[in-house]
Image (cartoon, rainbow, N blue to C red):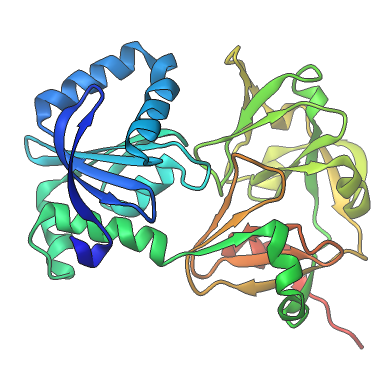
Length: 337
């Protein structure tokens, strides 16, 4: 266990009981295997007390000093996982998706997610990395999640690596239509709503305001943008969006909080076109990368090898990820004559 950065400890966990746990103090992560009966009781309680989840997680954090908790158990011919995150730096859904990527089923959100994978398939995966013990595999994968990822804080990265950014290739958006929505057309000023994007499947909660717009790309990708940056980057029109003409792969929608009303953005969106004099510096990623934007406490962009890291040319603190196929479809190099 030590080779993966974990130490073995015995802890009393609320609603779980005394368990043999593996603690990674540096990453504030605890992993423990629990009996199926204990998992059933915990899942039943969570189902009936969803509003108490945050309080329970806070208790685990205060008592155990860990922000992340991974529970593992066997049920019939499957390995089951339940992961809790008490920090914006790790979305529970994304963490489990990394642990059992491509071969397991994962559902949940940023704070809590569950996963399941066939024991037979998992054994095949373990054999591929020369491991025979299930817990060893999950500890190794957990270590890899943190170690094999580049973590970028947008607030400091732009100033620290300004010279490296300027050596990147400059790109501009192709003259193809985008769409935008004013957040006040979604809900009232100060009202909260959640939207899911291609880079953040667990969802991002925003507050409607005069200064907040929502952008919709040609693939249906969505993200928020300030009114000031929108006006500097795009030429707005009153043309309505035709989702069939745009051939959107992902139909964007938002959900108001706490009402739970779903609103399809294409019904209230208008077209806009990129202004020719705006550009970004960009480079293709060679490893998994997280980008934490400035002043966005619950969001990060996740990029995988082949995706692109983008930095706004007129604001080095505006850094984000663009999926590879979207980047190639919507951007072109700026060629100086």
